[in-house]
Amino acid sequence: MILGRIAGTVVATRKDEKLEGRKLLLVKTIDPETRAESGYVVAVDTVGAGAGEIVICVAGSSARMASGLKDQPVDTAIVGIVDTIQLDHSAR
Image (cartoon, rainbow, N blue to C red; front, side, top):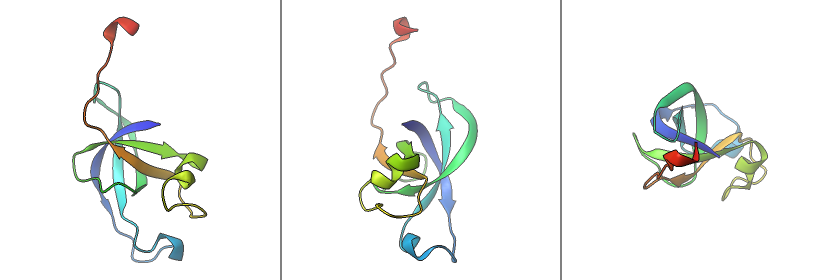
């Protein structure tokens, strides 16, 4: 699973018909302390995430297992909105 913060939206007027009606969001990957990491991913939103929210994403075959995405051309899906992150610093 991947932690990320919603950084924006992606609009594609022409896309695979299986993606019609799907909300595409730009996700900036973050570490557990919510510091930005390098890179962005475009993810299909399955939970109604919004701008600035921290989300949980899955990628690869796991993304196609998310609700309503079976047999769809999806590599990354947003499957959760994070309420809190509790990091045990002694576990390092």
